[in-house]
Image 1 (cartoon, one colour):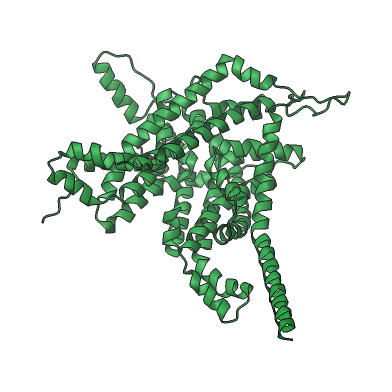
Image 2 (spheres, chains in turn purple, yellow; image 1 turned 180 degrees about the vertical axis):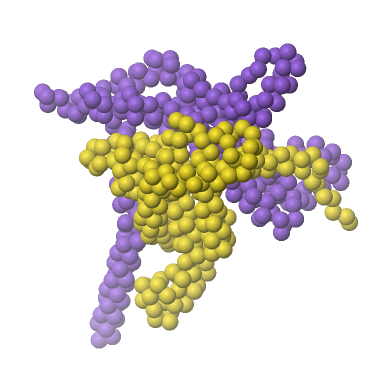
Length: 312
Length: 260
């Protein structure tokens, strides 16, 4: 009798927990389903379509040619990729973009490090304010921040005239600041600087001041304390900041479009041309894939080197 | 033992220079918006002419209207979807959703823009306000999700459990306990989505088509064609609006803003 009751009870309990589990699973789908569906539809699928577009032919009037030709045969090609590898112009532009992004990352690091260090070593009550002051300009419109440098570096600006005055004293011909590689890099550094300061600060803030104190007690100079303790400990922050600056800087087109001259096109400008002007979508897709791969490689390197290593 | 303060003068000077580098350009934009000269070169005299011109510029006003409408729709939809995503990512061990939420933020914007361009054209969706709004929702979801998730992870889990123990259904526990607690995060996420949408240039540029214009697109074409202090005026107004929204957001959810 009691055995039967036990079985009934355990079955009922099982049914109940099954129902609860079912409800839980349903709730899980109800909550994660809509955003998942939206991002699949408007991010994942478009990305896959773009990857597929890279092996299709361009349409006669721009866009894409049909996947199947009139005879019903597959109309696909690797020509677009061959064009990238064989035409040196595109490789050169890609390498130039890499170089711009590397220089930008380096300049951001040089400017951000002292600032982040100062903020991290400020009294606690001022830190939030100081870091907010770094983020604040970043919230203004991106185009406005680029436009500001059009004014500052423009031919009639005080800065340009001052530079040319000094150059004139040294007997050097006047130079143009705007629409050069220089103005592009200044713009790139300006729009990406906060991305470097934030991860550096987040890292430096956690350092134990006792370490530096101990080094000082043992006779290390300020220079030694920095290079042998603070800097090595901050490397994860440096790598994170470098990835956060390098990746967007590599793919940007608006900065070189607005501040650059004829020779300072970056890979983003060429992608923009292929999609909106030349309307060669397959080749534009190839360039986008190259950019994606470069961004992923950079992110991968950052993750690998930033992995905390155990040192004896 | 005396504590050594390690903030040498050199560090201060460099930091000050970097702050100047961050702010001087924006200050120049604002100052020249009141300058009575066609050129952004030297100070001539105070005027409000550029603002007056701006408010008589029909294209600009229409673009501003479009921007506002898109930002309202995009922030409403992405707040709903992003809150769900943030909640799901906090509550369940998911693999695909976090990947889909974070990747659009991590990769260069232009990639999202061009792939959506191909997608919309293939589906014969006319490029315009609708396609811009759909694109904005896609990239705003991730930002809202991150803010909401960070708010949730700072929340005491036992509060929801207590509500369940007292007999609340999961829905009631969410509506009456969890939601009010994460509300500041949700509102901060919504304001963030609003600013991101109203400021977006790159993705809008690719999904707008020939006829629709937004404020950033209008600013871009002005910069490219003819620079007048009207650009400074619209920039100043836009900066004021953004600043206002940040102040509201930081009042509502100081931690959410910082962690993002």
